[in-house]
Each structure stands twice: as C-alpha cells, then as structure tokens.
Length: 110
Image (cartoon, rainbow, N blue to C red; front, side):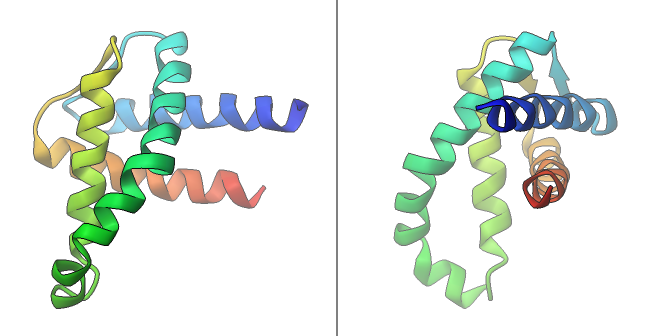
C-alpha cells in the first residue's frame, strides 16, 4: 500500500516536471497532478488497448511510430478530462507524452 502511494506521488511529481520542461503544458497544483495520474492510468488501462488494436495496421506500416501519435492524443485527452491540466496543441502533447513516458519508465523500475 505504501509503495503504491509513493509511486503515485512520484508519477505526480513526474507530471509536474514534464509541465515545467515542456512549454504548452500547465499543471495548476499538486492535487491536479495526482488526479491527472489517476486519469492517465485509467486511459492507459481501458482506452489505449482498444485504440492500439484498432490502429494496428497503421502501426505496422509505420514500424511502430504511430504509437507516439496515439500516446500524444491520449495525453491530450487526459488534459481535456482533468480540470487544472492544460495541454495546448499536438506538439506539446507529443513531447509531453515522450518525457512523461521516459520518466515513468524510470519510476516503474524502482
């Protein structure tokens, strides 16, 4: 239980760090980041697998590069669903999803 809470806080800090680095992404507070992490987790658990299955032919043709586009759109969706998280434009979402994914990968390895 404590380990899950620590990871949740680390993911929220990673989202705040991503917003600090990438122009066009704004997080209004730490609680907003915590809520956004829950919404991102729900999107990645329920919506992303369905969309990956639907876009599999495009992903095969582009040798997996379409996954970046899909992640950017899902990051924009999280910004749209979370009050206090602003994601302005596709480029910000693309860079933000890449940075957040790399930091999340490091957190998940701890």
